[in-house]
Length: 71
Image (cartoon, rainbow, N blue to C red; front, side, top):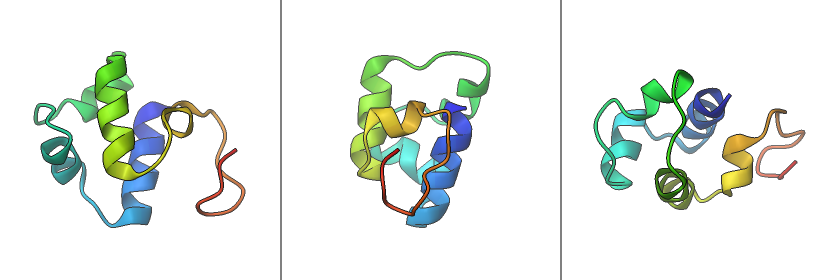
């Protein structure tokens, strides 16, 4: 679910996964592997900061009801 949330938020923000990884200072291809492994808290925080969202939004199992509104 984390990967799907990140992909959705990236699409909303117009940023690629590659650019996100680069800006968050995490390895190339790391985020794509999060569908099979768990990210570190530090990595999640870095991604949330770049995407200007909360870690809770990245971890959420439900889709936001309105763009930009937290669930």
